[in-house]
Image (tube, rainbow, N blue to C red; front, top):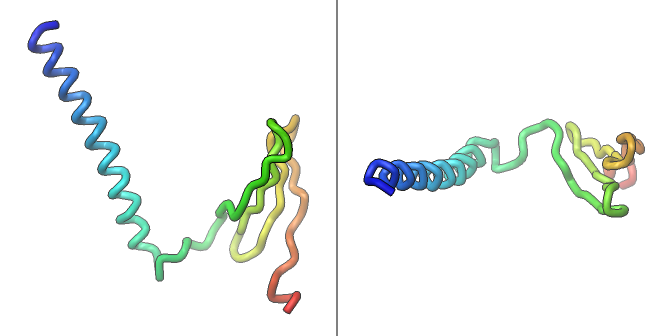
Length: 89
């Protein structure tokens, strides 16, 4: 292995480590931009449960409402919208 090959390998390693560190710090910086540290309105995964090795039952939140979906089988299925906690109290 010549000097050029060793320098290229070292430079590639430094570049990969720099990208990993920058992405980690980038996510922390992006979290600080959120209002009050809360998630931005939209779709987020609230929870997930493995039914079997292929299928999962997922709870998504969408603009404050909860959606239950079944994924991983021959097709994905929207089970339904979960009732609001506000209506129950």
